[in-house]
Length: 266
Image (cartoon, rainbow, N blue to C red; front, side):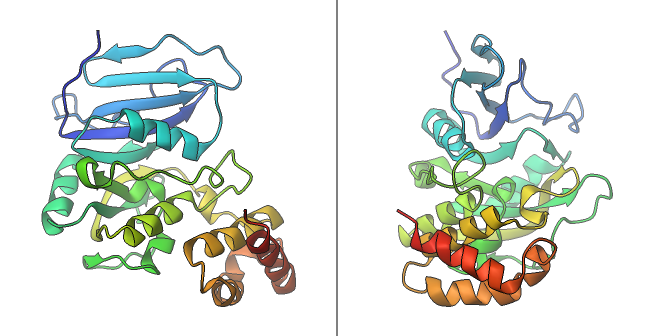
């Protein structure tokens, strides 16, 4: 029988084709307090290994594909009071648990708190983050990455990701931004706390040059997040995000692909 206890903090780890959990806690000293791990291991090229249930670790291997589907399965199975979304190539900083607690203490009424993360090779912050805490609104959630998100399970654990979006789906990005926008529309509050939880190697999928498929996904994302304002948002994206797609697309090319994605969203 497994451990049915309710941990204070549980990391929801998405991975693929692994025989054992990824070493996301390798940066923590051996004597440090450790969060629980819930690992959803999507197996597309290997036979799923037996379910692992050990002290503080559960690893569920499934024959399915799609990052949003993995996140949803983790939310369904989660037991922790505070949940943190995690990718298999993330490493948590030694002070991560203390940072997490400070973040939720700074936003006592929030269902969701977002944090920062660092670039592993340099230790520098991955983005240009705001220096002070704030309450998220419909625009700020568009800039959040999944590995920055933590939530109070009793308040936000019922939310689910739109499985049409995210890696492995037809629209390969934006699932976390939609999830946050849905939370705000449901009346939940979300705050930002200016300290990093983890680091990540190199550039994430959100920071490579956008392709035609990415532009289509962005258009669909904007329609999904802003159902009334999406035409204006697509035009603004075309201007503001030019540095992110110029290596592969012209502005007219980006605009056409984004409008195609928005209009074809079903």
